[in-house]
Image (cartoon, rainbow, N blue to C red):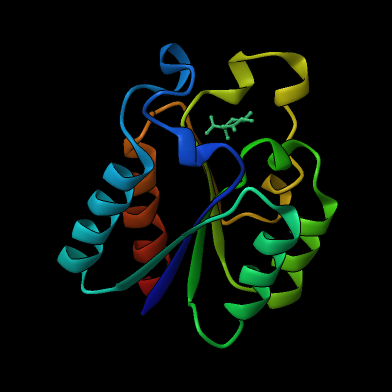
Length: 144
Ligand code: DQA
């Protein structure tokens, strides 16, 4: 089983970016933890990050026939991008949407996500560990 872990804009700045909201864990730390949990679960994990909507869409399209599941934190595109939702629908790969912060407790414009309706699960508010929690949950769901 292969899982693509996709992070969107500004998540490359985790560690120093608004640490009172997102914590001090870096994306490299998260990707290391995700790889370790992937090894524990016996799944292959590929981590990718881009600041560009079109690149994220290319990565989702490239996952067709390659990945069995996707963990996605599309950053601010989560609130705006029909194109990313369409890409996820087009490849029909089960995905879990992740956010470090509890987006439902933040500004009104962050309380809606375009991706949630098509997601197998949505997990937000657990900080960096949301990624590994989502990986465990998605793998269990795919194996069920
Ligand atoms: C985020 C929440 C988004 O609203 C924000 O634009 C991000 C990060 C999160 O992980 O909490 O970039 O997706």
